[in-house]
Length: 336
Image 1 (cartoon, rainbow, N blue to C red):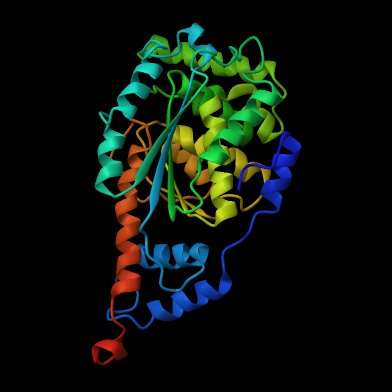
Image 2 (tube, rainbow, N blue to C red):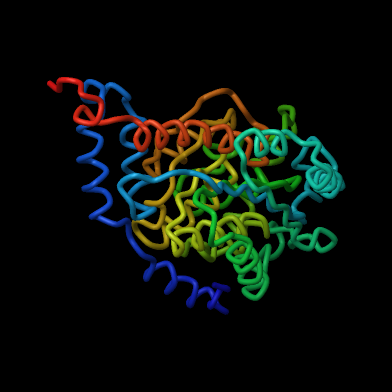
């Protein structure tokens, strides 16, 4: 189903009308979980994950056979302010690396049997420097949202969204500060590894962007301070909800994009879990704000969707145990 929205107002309406998890499937999965050959609660959080997944897939005995990983790439005009340790041309170079199978996310996608797609969004046309103008017009941000929406395979049964874009930790920090409140200092981190002077520049850039734009509305924050890849991530997560495809969130940038949906419509991220806690300082603060507990904590700061892709294995394990284990009756084992 192609995206039907052509304005931010229409996109908001789509979010408001998104489906919910299937209560019958949740009840059935909960009942099945209570009959499996294990002590109650012995699989810990895996049990909750399996029931959550079952609710979104509409069956009490689900499987994961068709995960999809989508990496979105965008160029940022704010790079002109010296906010990154790497030059802007690295974005296009890394897209080529993704396309040739040479990046970490390629290996992880292959490992977990995920179809991987790469979408480069107008890399030769960077967003505006948000310290002097809105990053995107409404038409541009809607186009990016639609790209993300249309990139989701309706036949997928799990989605991971990743990103590539030199300068995008600066945009993510600005978006997070705009929608969650607080100062630029609280939300700005070292990203790909800027030194102290670089961190000071980034923080100043975020503060100037917040001062320049009226970003009381979360979708306007995405438009004025975000990037095309952040908007595409938000669009993909929204589409997945429409298809009842569960989503694993990646690191700080992905979480900032997702948080714009949560701040726009309550419950918009109910079909998502946090894949990991990244090394970016404000990621924990942002996960706490959207009430997501990460599945993994490995000190990753790569992006690309890598942490979320690793968490595919956790979710596959949860679902495999839930759907594949025998019940006490089936196994002829005496229950409690």
